[in-house]
Length: 637
Image (cartoon, rainbow, N blue to C red; front, side, top):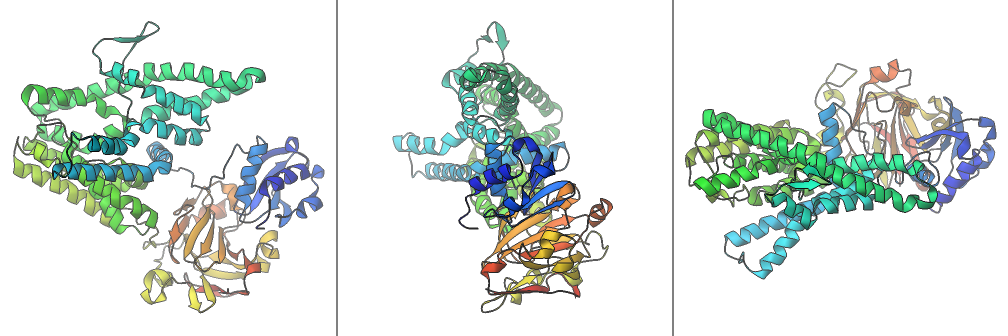
């Protein structure tokens, strides 16, 4: 299928099923385009099956299923470009956000930040090196060279709303250039100047409470979310002759004033209230105020509330020469950096480690935690929480010792001298070191172990997995767990259970061998592991199927259950995402087998070699009991 024109294929399938008007809905799973047709009789099945790139067609469960194989996300995306059925310009294989409102919010923020994590990490590292260079006297802070390098390092942070406008627009399906225009207005020099002046600001006679939107996160995300809804409302309402320019015109006219009139006041008043309350607490219970500041400073930053504290801090420094509000920020910032460092040392996810290493360095040296928070701690959740825990304890100790900052610096190791002139230096160091140790060790020992084999009891069995632990995860001599001998690759069983010959699997497409050779396994437990070492090429957002290309070039499909895409992710928890590197024996997903069975679906897990035709020989096991990590398929490449 290497030469298939998927855009043409999507159009031919659309024509073959009777056009867009004959399609009620369109979706896809790991291998099939799933269509619900108004009239099945209008579909020319014989013609569709002859199309280059189509493996076969089957009708089951009220769906017209066009089996395409690993490239079905591409066909689905192309279908979305020529119809209004999918709304997708690209295939979205990331796991759908699950959990409570806070978890979904964190997942949303993390997904919006993901595309800019690498530049963010690079900018943070550059800021750390520049700070170190000026501290050591290697670079004159007043030099033009430093001005250029500082602008290079600070630009991404200063204009962060512009970058997030692009990623948020993709997430909320809004026009990204209109989103950038909204963000540009928020950080426009004149608007920034208005936020810094003492005189009242108004728009069309309405008072405006200004805030500084540079480096902010939440305002632009909220703005783009609203923009998406506004555009979706305007598009069908406006006449087509003027729609292309009036939609962005009206969107800009509405959104920019709306954000300034609503987000600014909400954020500013909330921040002022927090600042006033915490400042008062320093008088009556310094340890409590320190715990609040140390624990929640990074949360304040996340919501843009930290700007409300800055005037109070600057006023304290100007009037009394130091700021008690600023004191607990040192343990707060270094605790998050420590949690990031623990992830860098602990994770087996190469991509995560590559971000966490420089991000922790920028946090410790420059006090720049954004790369670590948005690229590491927040997506993994627990490290962020552990950083907060360290900040709470460390902030309480530092504030109890009366520590304060004598200048407005980034809380960091290089900025430490600004914190040593006021208060008890010993308690300052004890509190900061304690915060770092709490965040580091909690994350290192109790944080998420990405791609780590679960050691707990397996769901659905009530028994420990030790008897069927994947060899690659427990036996150093096993290497990657896939190479058996020169030219031979072993595909391991992803779960313990009873092997089922492919012809006996209760799915016509899989049983026919159209997707390649393989086998079924009736699982004894709900932890599903990678059968090969390689790269995740597809990870369905429903968590029920994964496509993996091994380092040896073998393409493997792990499909949990029969027709379980219909469960829409209920009972499934994916542990990997597309693009990740995995080793044989790494955890792919956890599935509640009882939930699958209760929903009326077959739990048989399929292990398929989808590029069978390109390999010399593929020999799957056809019967008998398999332990997790046993050889299930032997392949000669």
